[in-house]
Image (cartoon, rainbow, N blue to C red):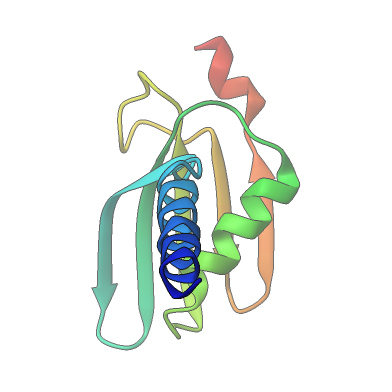
Length: 107
């Protein structure tokens, strides 16, 4: 009976490990992250595809946890060149403001 308990316990750990590896990766990648002293932080993010305003909000909150009062985040879709206009922005200055620039897709 003790061996069965050990097998069940090991199987449970295996299932937990496998399921945590299969969780979808983040829908974004941080391209650059620069700071100016403790005053301001600028982050460029590459998205896998267009996302909702709520998803932008969630990503912004996740990135903002760094503690900078002014955090400026620019979001680029695949194929968009960095520093040539972002598809969306989320800026904390100090309150969060979200802007989606759909017109960038027409360029």
